[in-house]
Length: 249
Image (cartoon, rainbow, N blue to C red; front, side):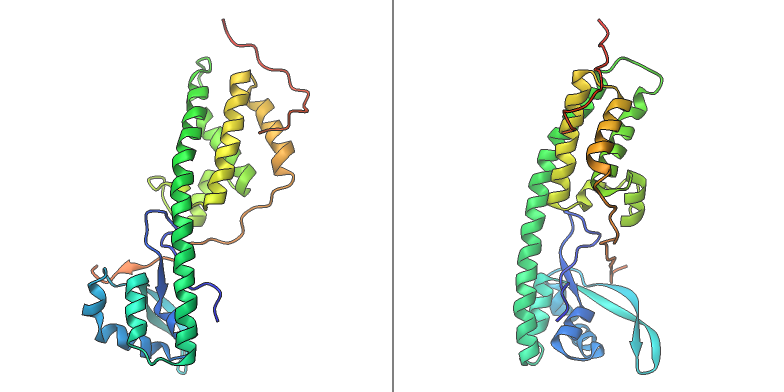
């Protein structure tokens, strides 16, 4: 059985978990066109639980590689569709696994939302610490520099690289794409950096401390986690030799 049964699009806490017609076919041990035909036959039933979305993918068929419509179904739609399938052993086993993964995904989303709310407080503390710095020509860029420093320590990539990985623009909230554990690490590091700023450390000293503690042991994220569908309706190391910067009187 396929390990990954449930997805997020585009891996955001505001989106709804879904599975696909391809996953249902592979794990229910039926042909994909059988599943898509069921979806098309009972589309009005499925629409009672939300819009029926799809993506275009390339699948290997008897006639070779062909572009195929892959349907994306939310939990209620997938559960309903499975009731229309023959109750074979593979279908029953898949149904149990799918229910478990939807439960795990909903639990993860709830954890992300709680962690994100806590993270907003940590980010506000960092912003306030930066705002209290003496005015300088480059003060406006410091938040971006510190944000990239945090992301490089946690993910091995800066904000732009992460946005490219997730396929999102600057208007989208990048942190909504992080897991609860990832947001927790981001929050912790922002709190540490905010404390160091208040103690008088400058950016260079903070960066060197973070690099020494985190970047030498962290590896970059390797695989993107988004899967797009569309609608059919068109604390740094305290053992250091850095000297705090004196604050202006």
